[in-house]
Image 1 (tube, rainbow, N blue to C red):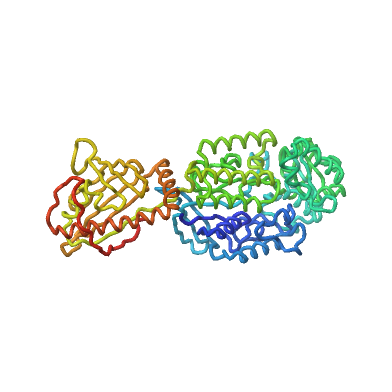
Image 2 (cartoon, one colour; image 1 turned 90 degrees about the horizontal axis):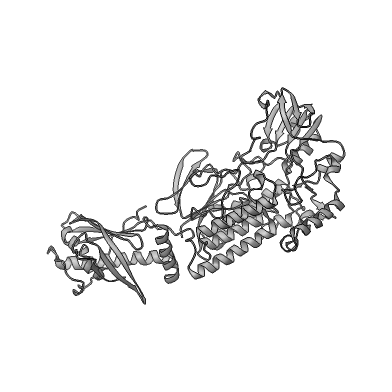
Length: 634
């Protein structure tokens, strides 16, 4: 198993770091900023954080804390960004994986590597220096609240507006809006926070709401509101009953949103993502904030609304959401459509083994615990403790997920990756159990198929290249060299160099037959063949060593394996050899023994040409020799 690349050190990326670190899986995490935390690092120098000065979490600490590391007891129910940033620093230092995070480094390109795995190019933000490394797997945890989405299409006349226009992504403090007439567009958590905050200093603030929705308070009956959402309610109770219970609780605690001037919700409860705010409704009830419908057009400093009204506005803040984007991945790999990314259980890419996404969801609940659970599943896959089903099965699950979203939620870019906290945790547990069962059976799709670069080993032989070539090109004698091979014979009537042959191999009680085709043959220089049954290429290169002898190099290369061949190889390695790394090590040892045996036979013959013989010929004596190791080919 090769190193894993983790992109991002925010909520989700840190969860992956901790889980892989705990499991003993080597990884490199790349973070564009100078510190961990992502959006929770206020004024993050990565240039992508959307955190504003008054930002607090909107799920309680009980729901938001990592299961592996609880938040301090003295933290309030809803800590602000400074406390969350400190918590994340403490989390990293407690588990001791800070040294695996490379800061101030952008991932600029990720592409599938020839032969499997991924080539990851990173760029240091200060020096501009770029480096490329190969990884067996990549975990994308770059978040989805960093690429702001402006209104699409732009409102008519927006380019004539005489005031200021920004996306809420760039909002930090309300001071610059003092004494101004402010318009905030949107009805999410950020829109509500910003509208309430600016209304305290502005001449007047308007909240433009296109469609109605539900507002959940942070506290209900003296407790955090999400305490009311239990595994029983969200997993066992029918959806209609859930709606009835929660609607009753909302009526008792806050009343109806229409009583505060907000439009009537168009969807059923839980049919759209709710807004969580403790201050929005009181602010509306006090008259400090006014509600407007959607914008119809701009005209200089005047904004017209769909109900025919208009207001003079000095500043517009668009809280219109974010685009899901991966600038480091080509569209041929991932191309989100309206924030929709086709992932098996919101994590695994069915089309690209070894590419995983953590934290790419819109939760009714907390990101941390769900990202932690996703990371454990990915670690199972990386370690071979679980396997993925067939591509077809994964695509069917994705289709079912989309159908469920379409039935439940209003059509919106916001609802293309929605998950419920406890049901999704149960879904991930089910995926891990099913994956473990597949792994035990040796079935399913190869997971993050271990990629082995071409292996090479060299040895010096005190015999001419022609003599060495005559030995290794006589395939009927292959059983004399390879410790795994019993015998080989020519396939069909044709004999000699360049003909096809069949190898009869064995390992203990396991026997198998391989079909081979000679691909390259030049006396005294090279001999290579392709094992067509499993896609492995074997080659020998001969070069004069300058002292009348030969430098013989044997190569083993699996980069040409197709998916089925790779799956069979991985399955054999896992079932018979205890893992792919053991398989690789055994092959290295086999190459070493092969070269030692060829050396002994060639030096016994000296410069005498070797006639082609039958496979029944006696094995020459074997003499121990020290191979000359060369760098593994990349």
